Image (cartoon, rainbow, N blue to C red):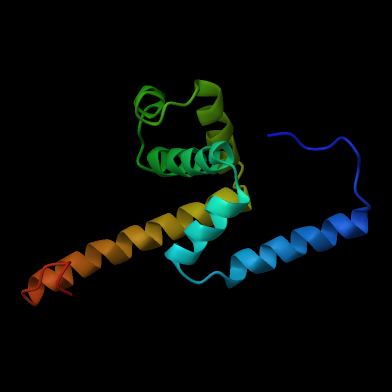
Length: 124
């Protein structure tokens, strides 16, 4: 990924970033989000973001660096950078982890409630 060395007007940069944030905020389901990400990111950018998110998840599960390196195919430096951001309570990483945990919690309870009412997850 390359970014031009020519600087944008700071006001224009702010507007462009706000527009991107608004589009992301307005995407309301996984399918639309996937379409957006596939069209706006290169495969390398998409995979880099996905791997960083996986590192956040694995670190929250107390997985070792070695496990993460082997499974996700990332360097120790990448893991350390994500761990450092988490330790510094970087709001973006913290927010991502909050959403991951909420989805995990919802999925767990969906499974339990489905079992309680005699339905499999696929039938619900």
